[in-house]
Length: 95
Image (cartoon, rainbow, N blue to C red; front, side):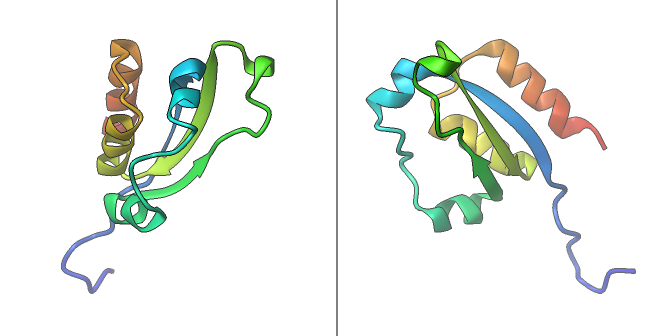
């Protein structure tokens, strides 16, 4: 039984595949601070260290966040891939 008025949001895990050239053009930096990410509902972000030529054209970025946080992260990385957006929506709608 929860005594809080609002139940905590469910955490989801999703791996974004980001274009390496675009990612590097931003220097691998987001337009958000660590506190901003937490405020958006993003718990963790895992970016592989050896993402140069080893991973090819796309960098896998694993994110643990609320549904709201995943959508916010997608905006921060300028995600426009309809297949990834559709899959993210599917993942966040599961219970």
